Length: 312
Ligand SMILES: NC(=O)c1ccc[n+]([C@@H]2O[C@H](COP(=O)([O-])OP(=O)(O)OC[C@H]3O[C@@H](n4cnc5c(N)ncnc54)[C@H](O)[C@@H]3O)[C@@H](O)[C@H]2O)c1
Image (cartoon, rainbow, N blue to C red):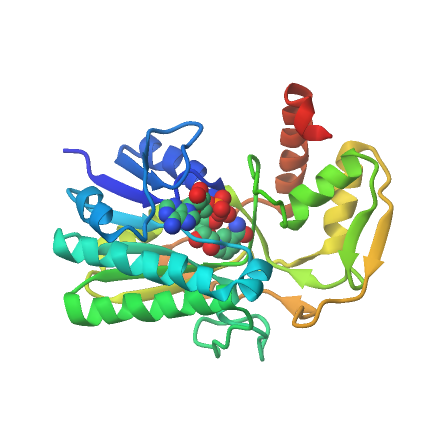
């Protein structure tokens, strides 16, 4: 019999790619999201709705919990919204699982749990002091998950990723660097860069992240009743200016870069060590940065040809 997987937040960027891969791998899937997926049947529900989660989160072998508000800047302005949506929302998912006898939980955590790192590359057991409410919610959820592992025999895996990128990334508003830069260059607008643009970031391709999720699921099932946490990193950081030059090359266009003052709390280097995931999950990132970025530029060029209203 096919194993059944529930994905919360499956209508989003990562969720769409993950659902495709789960189906491809032979799982039966159910997507729960506030908004309808363009591709998959969706249970339209808010994960904060505890009664609804009790009804929807049942008869499954595992839950991937992606549903989240994700904008760190917005979280600074509206922390309560993030606490309610992310922490309270997770609590109702965990409680529905407990009530209905599901105990494998794979969580989309974030590099934001670390805040400003003391050491580079960051290791999983380095200090975690988030510097915005978004990161605080991710760390709080990790704590909540580990307490369910302890108290209720859950198996928990927290995957901490950094700057995810890939085709079909359409956040609204788009705050992520790659799709924003591609659009600015495409429209002959200035590319807005905070600081010198030389700061190094851990960009990781969506297909590598999806691959890690599938491996994390098998790992959870073979290492039950424990709390596991992993960095997912390419270990090959790139600068914002590297990103701009690959886009220029692929589009055959020159960008005009406008520098703004560096943002406080924006470290010069932010990337992680992935040796734990390599060893335990038998996973490593495979997509070369230049190839991955080229693929995203090509995706958007085609997309805007078909959806020219969105290219304006
Ligand atoms: N994109 C990145 O660079 C990145 C980096 C680190 C971690 N993450 C984490 O990965 C996960 C997926 O990110 P993404 O880029 O696909 O984001 P996304 O915004 O594209 O997808 C998140 C989805 O969650 C849904 N959602 C939010 N609140 C909900 C609620 N209360 N009930 C039901 N659905 C709800 C949204 O409607 C959306 O479809 C998030 O948890 C995010 O914090 C993302």
